[in-house]
Length: 264
Image 1 (cartoon, rainbow, N blue to C red):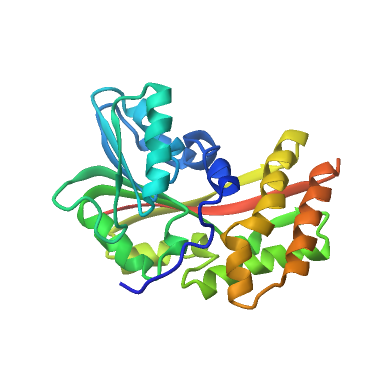
Image 2: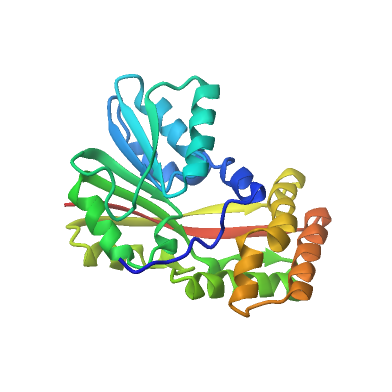
């Protein structure tokens, strides 16, 4: 499959932010489909917070396996599961295009994964082949709303899409899930949207605080430099703008995420 580069990387600011994801804030659309005893594969599980939540929901008679391309983040996920005392979850290094060969699942779930893949339809086709239900949720970066939208924050929004494209992915993947699922051969397709909103002091501190670091030190910094999308001065302006936004009592931000439930 065509290689695409993971645009976020695994800087501590990134992994820490991803560890704050839960089923409630990042996969609520899937909850009505869950029943005790299910076998779920979580593709691109990262530090495992959603995976562990899913394991709690399917109970001790079920099994949830998280896979990720990064051995480092898989170790982080294993440690999180041990600390949480959740026994019906496993974490493995795996390939999104050929997950767990020979195994079948009730659900294959992926959160913010297809946007990073060079062949999202091929991935969906592979997931469909080994499961009864494919569930995926992806951001639409171009629809992100930020208030106040200062020039550096507007540039950040543009850069997120541009960097994904330069790395072989798609920053507006959430808007394309319906088409991709159809092209993957799924017969029954349900789609909708969920949102993240950061407006409270805690929410602004979480989102803006991570980007103060990510703008300067994560794969975002390395990638925008390597692809000639932004220089050090511009990244510093973005970091400073997120810091200012975090302190702004009127700061408000919403991110649109498309989701799909696909069968058959």
